Length: 219
View 1 (cartoon, rainbow, N blue to C red):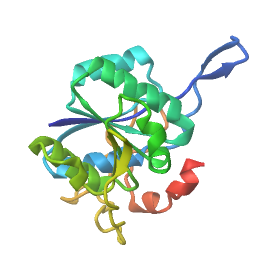
View 2: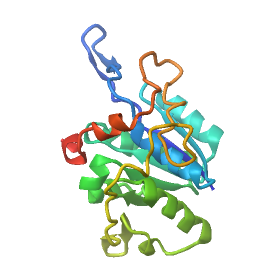
View 3: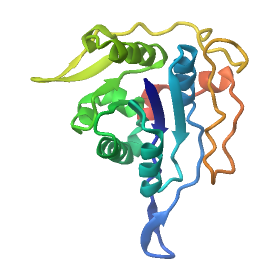
View 4: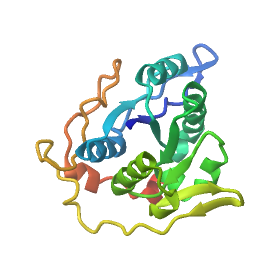
């Protein structure tokens, strides 16, 4: 199974110079979340590609999906970017009708029912997803029952249902800071988009530990 993990394009802002919504907001953060998930999947021999689509246009997004042809599309969803995350899920379904579409991140964790209101989305991952995404992919590959994977919200015939809660990790040792460690470290080598000039590529555990809580991030 091939996975493609994405952050959605940034919403364009109203530009007073053109009177159009064509102003790209500055990039002020590095999406370490999908970098950690990529490292977790690759550590378990899952072919994984990830891209930060902050500056990409929708035609470029469609071209990327067509070019990579993944079996699973994972989308990171923050509250401020929820509209484009929703649109990205719909675009992925249009281009890749057979792909599994998974959404995670702060907004998805706090409002999974809202995310699953989009019929393009198959499943929501709650909270820290490094262990969940690996088990989810394995479950897809063997044709297992998603209800057996903890930390998910699924669509059912009667609405949505949560699987059992996943115990939160109490240590950071599962995600070492050194990229040479043969375990899980945030792979940031592809976080710079082809037009980006300011994204940092230095993975550090202190950056993850210093990141705001999911509750704060969702506000």
